[in-house]
Image (tube, rainbow, N blue to C red; front, side, top):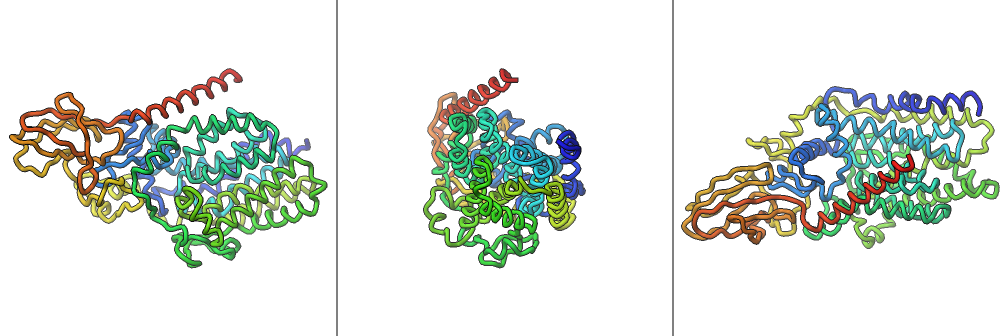
Length: 537
């Protein structure tokens, strides 16, 4: 190992931190900036609410949908919000907690890609590949245009999973696979078929690798299996139609950049540009791979075959000619945006550098890739405008605190799939408990944002409505005896019959018995994995 390689090896973490600065510099601006998914700050507020209510794992949040609540973290990837919640509990604001998550994803993903590439490449090219991975325009799009916290965090775990596969480290594979599922369920669904194919191609450690994937699924089963099973309880619809979001091939190579939206046809005001450096590396790497196919050793050949396959499949899946697959493959329409496969191209682009493993002037090549990847793309990593918005703005916009703000009233919340029993979305905040019968006296004592004790007095039988969606986990009791909950009209709210006289009624939320089984399975599996790590030190 020569001097340059020794320096990179010893100071790799410091070098990565320094080279990350151009990508994160705009995260240091005061307040938050304009992104498509700024509602995630409101969701972090809800995560904090249920964590402080000791709801573990967090699932049903109390405030959104005009206070009717929602099983948000039963369906939405929770890990980014777990991480951001730690920052918030440490004293950072909601906004800064989210920005910390964005910022840390850059050096961490760069570091793990560097570690993965070192298995195949020199120190210099491994560093160059990790720079290419981070400074892809799609990564800038995720942070500064879309603000998609789940997809941003997923880029940290992709290279860890691949590294664990080639080393046969099933414990690391299990933990990183579970983390990917909890980071973004859609991207994990997209990535795992490719990962399974890579395991078959790699062949070595095949038993350990499938064991790792199985344990990863088991460790995260508390999230993904209830999400699948309980999806039938929600209206089967999506906000976006995938037919409208197939990019054209020209959009991949056109250096357009914008902060707008994905729309039908080639009129998008957001970019799907792959970046000139990435395009050149993929193109030249592919040519070299096929020209020198017989001279490349079997291990490098395997990963390059996989990279070519992932690229071709991803490009095809982003083309309108793949619409028949989007119509027929299970859950695929929930990807919503075919251009999401750009995440896979961003992942494999650095792998094409393996074709240059025998290149004589590797140091020069690595230097050029680093200079051009950063120089041509760093200007994408910036905000569209300095909004300077703080926590209060997002709480007013996404949380219906009384009095309900005009900002919240303008938020349609169409991104929330209503429970199947709901006929309409609430349009105002209701009391925690209410009835249509004016002769009923109600005294409400709210235990927390989900639970309450209600004292009633009435001369006749009546229907009591509780202003939370009727969803598994809620129970109601009258004078200590469980009662059957029905779904009230028109919102699908918790409703039940109360006989005449004086009664004390309790409504509580807790884990449903089936979910509790999955929670225990996940907890036991995770404990088992941690025990293995401790034993192996």
